[in-house]
View 1 (cartoon, rainbow, N blue to C red):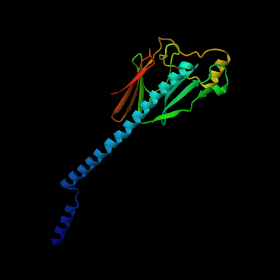
View 2 (tube, one colour; view 1 turned 120 degrees about the vertical axis):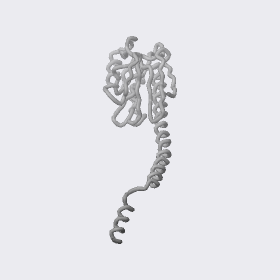
View 3 (cartoon, rainbow, N blue to C red; view 1 turned 30 degrees about the vertical axis):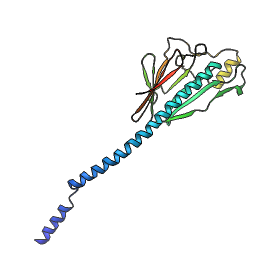
Length: 209
């Protein structure tokens, strides 16, 4: 009888967690989660700010080049490992020497986990990380300083050289009925930044959302 009682007590003792143990475990988990979440949001927020600054700098650079060159385009593109900016610039005033043309290497501005989208003048929003609209090409009107419509083609070195060799100007898309880029939105964690483009002046503003 004593032996059976001892076995019964042993089984009852190893049955599982007590209520106190569960409360302590949940409390520890909540504390750890509270410590990790701000750090994660801080990292994601830094990435959003860095990507926003990179896009703003790219717009400034493209505008400077477009005002004095035949071609000044920037391409914001999503790839499998993140977002990249590439410039297509004519660095010469005339002639078709390859040394005067520069197609800058792509610059990675954000990892794939960041969310970058743009909205055009028709109100349509495109997420660069999904679907077939994984890039946007922007350039400026040399005559007015404002933005041209979203470009459908990127002008690479061999194309620029061929056109310049024929003594022609680069046929950028200028039809005002085509959509313009209105905003570029960068999201990550709890932070969102919106770059609003003014098509008439070529300027932009950045705001938190």
